[in-house]
Image (cartoon, rainbow, N blue to C red; front, side, top):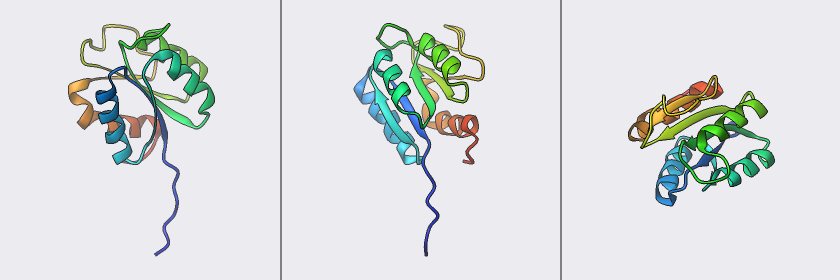
Length: 127
């Protein structure tokens, strides 16, 4: 049977811890997302600028770079208003910094159950 090809949404994932970043990336890829990975906010901003197809940004609130995760999320929402932005952290909560309007916060212990449905909802993709 021929299948209809549907392009996978592209997500820029930012986390400094390689094992955590890889686990999140694998989780997202298993849910049919294409994932572009960055270890810091400087690299992430460059990826966002050259990855015009990016539909989402998943960023840890405390990552290295000239900006912290909260600042990157705010800049990304201003520059790309349709970008789905999800802040994640294992060390802070939704009150730890400014989450951009329309963005969401997920505590890392809940990523496996909340991240995919949240991204699907924010980008308008059915689960």
